[in-house]
Every structure is written in C-alpha cells, then in structure tokens.
Figure (spheres, rainbow over the protein chains, first blue to last red):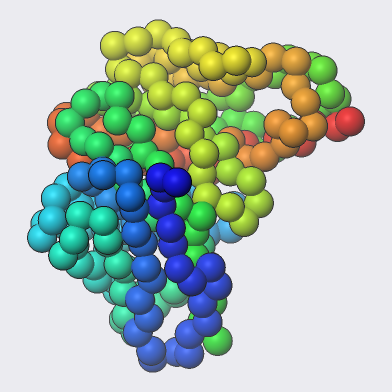
Amino acid sequence: DGGITQSPKYLFRKEGQNVTLSCEQNLNHDAMYWYRQDPGQGLRLIYYSQIVNDFQKGDIAEGYSVSREKKESFPLTVTSAQKNPTAFYLCASSMWGAPTDTQYFGPGTRLTVL
Amino acid sequence: KQEVTQIPAALSVPEGENLVLNCSFTDSAIYNLQWFRQDPGKGLTSLLLIQSSQREQTSGRLNASLDKSSGRSTLYIAASQPGDSATYLCAVRRSGGGADGLTFGKGTHLIIQP
C-alpha cells in the first residue's frame, strides 16, 4: 500500500532531551513537509524539503532540525531549545511544480514533554 | 503574511441537512486552496483541491467554490450524514512553483446529529 508512515504514534520526552520523529513515504513524492498542530489550532509549517539534501525553514523552525538524506525519509528532531514542544506533529508529502499537487498526510505523532 | 480564517468554529446540525462552511484568506495571490477533513487524533484527509484558475470543484456530496478576488472559499456538504462529523480545515498554498507549505485555518468542528 502506498502512503506515509510516522513513528512512534505517541512519544514522551523529559525536559532537556532531544527526540527524533520518523516520517517515511513510498509515494515517490519529491517534496516532504513537517507541521505542528496545537489544540484548537490550525497546522503550522515547521520545515519543508523539495529534494534530497535540501530543506527550507517554515514559519516556526526554531528549536527543530531536519535532514533529507533519502527521498523516502524526512526525520524531524525536536531539540531541547524548543520551548514548548508538546503538540501533535504531522508529516506530509506531495509532488511539486503543478497547481494540482495535493499534500498527503501521515497519521501523526503526539509528543508529550514530562 | 497570509492569514486564513474559518467560520463558524463549530457547527451542529441534524442529519440530512445541507450546510456550508466558510473560509477566507487575506492575500489573494494563492496557487491553490485545499479542503481537508480531520478525525479526532488522526491525520488529514484531502477532500478537494481548487486551482487558483478554477471556480469550483465537486466530489460526491461535496462542492467547494473559490472566489480569489474576494479571498473566499466555501465547502458545501449536501444531505449530511453522521459519518461527516469531523473537523474541516481549509488551507492555501502560496503562489509560485516548487514545493511550498500550506497556510491553514483553525478549522470548523462539525457534528451531525443522528
């Protein structure tokens, strides 16, 4: 089945620790994205990547880092510098370059800082 | 900076009614607009995508319209069913080619009463 997988589904972190969220896609999409969702809020863009070894900051990149070593994978690291990391994190992917390019989303990872 | 607003924030209607969800955006220079559905604790499911050059798109009981000049979009749901209960999110993509993230509204929480 084609799609986007995120792991783990739930993640607990102690303050001061870095954690990495996994995102894998087998849709052969060029572009991948990370969003953050807080209760009662819309999604906000953290980082996005058009191609391997290239990525751009979104609207709220501070305290986060990413890598794009493979087309299929776009892991997100939440660092200890992120002041309020408890949130629902969603990964997405799409083709790019055409106005018909739909973004497809994974099931999300819920991160809780203890 | 693009801002997306969705009205109403919540809506509860009896089964079988037709309903309209509203979305407005502040910058008319958009590439496309997407409507998504989100079930509690889940990722997003794409419902409809309207290109900036289009006026509307239809899929089954759903019809989305776009008036770019006035910065408005509506999602019309015909003959609502309890299974339509979810949060509906509107998102716009900035103008231009290449990959780019979406700017989301906060969503409309819809409850269809059996």
